[in-house]
Image (spheres, rainbow, N blue to C red):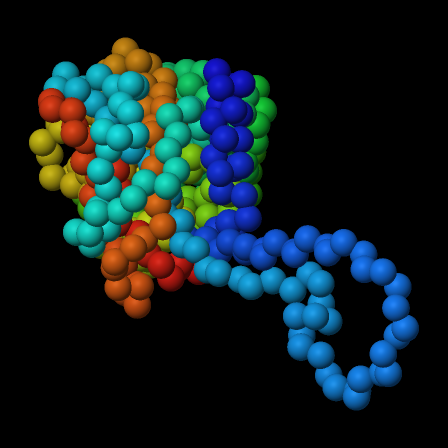
Length: 369
């Protein structure tokens, strides 16, 4: 799988050679070919020197180039059948893509797997049962990533905290995930005071990262701030990688986030970042999953639900597989108002019975990370 990922990314990188990334858009420089040299003429007496005049810039600089700005919008697309299975044999001529309701010509198409740049965003304030299931299965999450992938780990409650910066080392990721558990030595598991381990002079005496369970009537968990922080990390990664936030949460969100959901969404759509969420701790129809659904739907990701250890273990690899095996469509926008800051995207497939998942749009002016 790692080799396939490398090939897929390299193919798109070659296609996008010369394109500078900026909010899903790029600029490409085109050089005018130099004229072929004429055959040497017979030698003749040199004419008198011409009056001294400044020659045009073009004749002074043999490397003179005319630069033409070309915007290239890259759109990852997932295609599934009616049973939810991924479909991998859709041809480029079966896709149609629209920007602001104007159909566009697909300039680049790839169906190869891509290496992932992923931030695992772990909710550190879960109900007791959900917390136990997540803790027991977290090491399995590492098995869904390939050698070419890079992964960072953030946990959050009132504020996000980076536990592990981007690494290609799966063993290092596994070790960090194994440390992320509740210390079972303490009785009365469920209160924050009983799950944070021993403390000396008010400071923790062990490096363990704890997933705590909520006993508060009102959550102070800041989900929007956490998504924003994860998007900041991913904004620095290249366009030759699939950028995803792997969010494991019950979806509960306090109202007093520093960054609004709109702030986080603009950052995600400015840097081609998709959110894949695993909802735990409540039923899929519960209102607490609204935030997870909105982040996933608007960015072209997906939401999965689980309340048991077995379901979680099977979901981990499924999430990374779906993110990796997406189609990649790219086009240069034509016939739309380029003065607009935001543009809608719609992708259709001509084959009946198939469903398409992609991001709903993009920003031409990126949000500063």
